[in-house]
Image 1 (cartoon, helix red, strand yellow):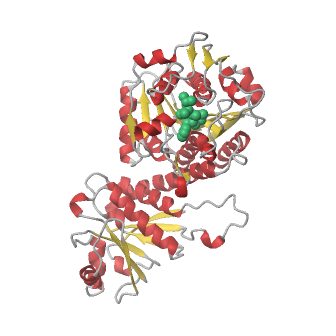
Image 2 (cartoon, helix red, strand yellow):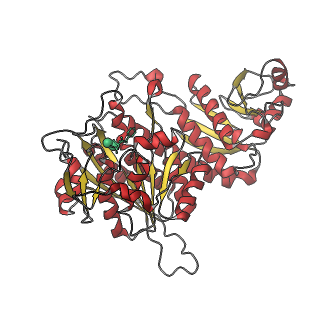
Image 3 (cartoon, helix red, strand yellow):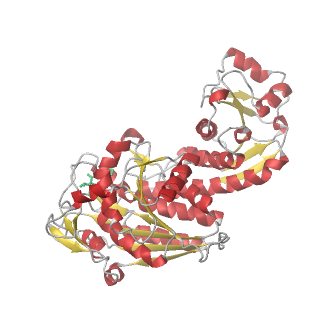
Length: 504
Ligand code: BES
Ligand code: MN
Ligand code: ZN
């Protein structure tokens, strides 16, 4: 997808295959809709009277209006003007893009981001317009025998039109960010959707290397089993040992221009580190999962995919600052060399762990990556993981679970989630929950029992994240959709990218 900004106060003269204009439910026309209505002697007001109610997300196409250059005017409903939110705007952009895809158009123009929204400045609206269009044009066909070329969206170029030349700078920045976000989400979604026999730890390492080739600002190291052994990542390796697939530990290092030092700060702030869970298939191991929906455990690397997608977007934008991505990746399989309940392993930190359930493997690979993160003297570490079914029970598929040892970091992530419409909800981390991880045979157990399962998982990770400000995102409910709509969502790339933009 290609995105650009155009400035014109005459949408009726714009030469484009299709142009969207917003219509509120109470019959109020956007500025662009009004201009086209007047140029076409009232064609829009007439159709509003006759049939178009302006319900949020609805569309109606008017073709070949006299006095209008574009052959298709797409009316997009915005709901009641008093209830207009960034979400309604995003939904409207998605509806327009979906129409363009269905009509097999190659390019189109949208005026929807020009419409004022009290809670979103123009830069945010331009960003979300591009992301919404990316959402509507995403198509997966990598593992079909004969992908149908006619099923592939043709839409390649979206122009956002604004009337006011003063809007150009903010619109261009927002659109650059939104385009990069769309590309990052698309990468994250495709990696998630790929089957476990294709998207292996080796494959993830190759994809990371390819990103490093594409972007000069990104250097990538992929460690193999021997190198992981040399680091003494005994907990991570204990999970990897159950599979014939070789593990990888991926280190991505993004270096943008230095961030302007905050006044009064003595040392330059350390990098932000993102850690993504990369279990390319989670069978549960010896504590085997039930068969129903076990296929969805190919999505257990969506944390890793979100790190790759976010860093891709960061590199495309060229954000200032230093960002590290860490991805421990392996399979969780039952075998003669797999972890057994009761086994005790030694983590890179030296702390020992009694594995009471081999299906609580995410924390076993993440804990060593969190220890590895210490060497960067980070200003913040955020891990992203499809960690617990309990988080899905607590928050459903709406909010990502957020845990943090630092209130400022938690607030910044919550705010970035709201701003990007990729929301999280904070859950507790009190020391009182730590008691559930007590083991008679090691420094800790890897499970804390049913009650508060998402919290005890986070408490386990907290024991390895004491050296820095840390947050944990449990994306078990938000990273993918099941049932007939099955597929990766690309979350939480929008939240992470927004957080990094806001920090830069
Ligand atoms: N990858 C799963 C978490 C998961 C399960 C995400 C279902 C989405 C849907 C994780 O490795 C896991 O198996 N967690 C266990 C932990 C339990 C054994 C303490 C779980 O949630 O059941
Ligand atoms: Mn598991
Ligand atoms: Zn898992």
